[in-house]
Image (spheres, rainbow over the protein chains, first blue to last red):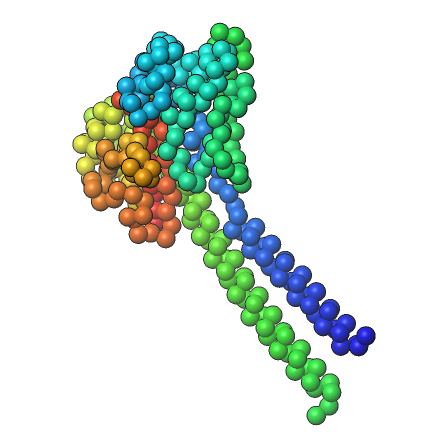
Length: 147
Length: 170
């Protein structure tokens, strides 16, 4: 093998390493993720679920949403909060109903950029998104049994 | 010409190229860093303003008019649209609104209804019910700014979830 080949190979590796280092430093400065919006979304959604009664939801009267059919079948207890109602459905093994409530309430609010997962004794609703930055919030909720 | 002079020439060209790349790299990093700093400031400000608005505020609406107290749109833990209306009616001057919310940057606060699905399933943005900038903007893209932060909060009002948006830009 000729001497020049080794020099070219060395130079090639040097350029490669140099480029990798530059790109790494550059991406470090660009990819500083800010999680405040995700935090607000999750906190606000939990606040609404915990503090709002089913009776207050206008969606129960809107035929465009599946939650209305749950109400027509008299499956919904208007005196419970949204979170309590979801919890009751979970205890009854009707997690599909819980999913309908959560999906109807929050669908279309988060936009293309964000995804959401909601769990209560297991996953109830999850959007098909790969998370690159994630915020998780938890609350203790009252129910007919402690979850 | 001696062989060493060729090597020296190559070396010089390589050093010059390296210096040019280095200079461009450092200047672009500095540009990103300074831009990140501005964006960080705006994020902090928009977050603080949104959190203030999501509180009950301090002092009465009459005192807000005199520039005293803290603006908040909640009453007993629930969103209170009359407070938002009071804020818009009593602090009609844009500068007064900014002063009361403690910012020198540009500010757009709005309350937006839930979007609806069109015939083809596309999402049609919800109507903006209240805004401190009248009809100047309907979406974030209407604002022409290099440094802009948009924070959205969810509030429960009139039987449904609404978006309380805070946009801050420089």
